[in-house]
Length: 148
Image (cartoon, rainbow, N blue to C red):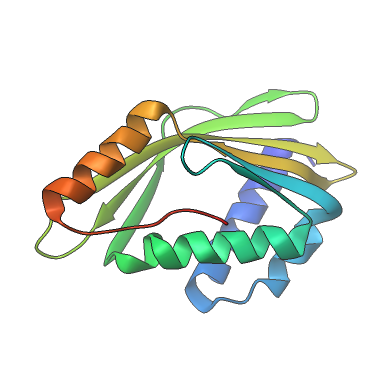
């Protein structure tokens, strides 16, 4: 399987876990010492191992994604592969009744080893973080996407 194939399968199962909070289905996608790195201050962190990764993801989803009424994910370009590495840019449009939509852009990177995720990262450019802070101020609606 290519890194893109792994990412697509993982992303599909991730969406199921987002809906039902069952993270067990995702353990098989990760090596025991896999890392998940968030790049973008003030949310930067690195989580190691599936248990820490899923705990951090759940915290972030509870503090942000689940506070909205809708969430629409779109890719901003093609998957780029180089050896065991894959990169893709995306944007998520969040909706909340009575508030303007919020759009968060970022880039995901994944390294696959022996068919499993060895490293995953999400990078949020400074412009995206600033847009989030501006959106919160404009809409008087607090979100907390932090993982730790």
